[in-house]
Image 1: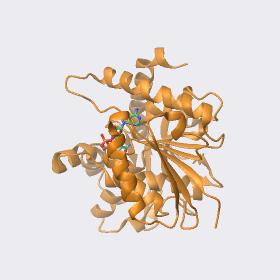
Image 2: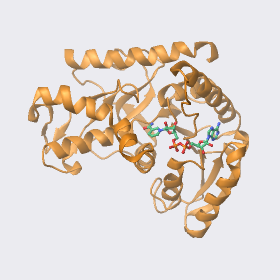
Image 3: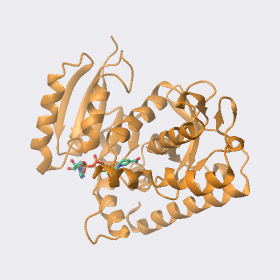
Image 4: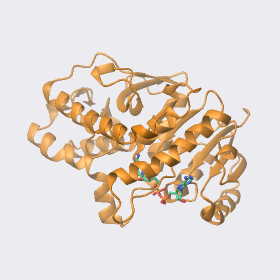
Length: 326
Ligand code: NAI
């Protein structure tokens, strides 16, 4: 058996974590031969609820669960962490403006970035799930100057999975037939699901769908799927978000399938003309625990317009918290 790795999860008593933690502990994320120590962070008032979650984890008798740490101190939760899933965030309260939300979260993610910088493994892989995910990831990254910025990522895998499922359904196929899906940009309603490089049954996806349906139905459906879930369920996506977090980390740690890629919010190196340093979702191939942006895809005018719109939104979010970025 391998030595255990340390997996930090924030917002560990919340609804996403209630699905996520059990799947990490059962080996869905890092493989059925990789023991894990869960290091769980919550705010002080939620520690009692967290205790209940930890009791349930114990009661599953997961063979791969080598330990559980519970804390309201980020320096305890991130100590020597090999992986961190930053799920906890401040939700938008009544009357709260977008700017207030950005600032409230900036405070949380700057403190967590600093703690990661101080105590985590130098090879830590960080995934930010808590919204606004891309900008929260940027804030954490900027507060962790001693860690390679490539190690901070934001989750757009749920959008990627939603885009695959919607397309498969339209064409009467299954998600197994869909390859090379791409989500560009922000995890928000400006994200751009791109079918021009996507393949269904080995054939170009954009050529198999009507352009009107693509522009007027498909793209808005994927962009607004989170709101549609809230309307139907009365609560935001939880199990599917947890599933996407598992998928994201598994791809990153264990690699993507040959002939396919995934979407990840990552530190832009200027590829495809996207401003360097933004956390922007790109198509990525993962190998040996590292990711690379898929290069050389042709970008037509339809795509460029949408890629720029979502880039502009991310630049605006960054500028709104500029005074808090080191
Ligand atoms: P939730 O409200 O059920 O749980 C959040 C938990 O975080 C709470 O238990 C809260 O006490 C904790 N928390 C708050 N501040 C914290 C801090 N500073 N340190 C540690 N813990 C803290 O929310 P849920 O449904 O689990 O969602 C979590 C986040 O994920 C939200 O921001 C949500 O918008 C986001 N999300 C992102 C998705 C994506 O695709 N990127 C998809 C779905 C949700």
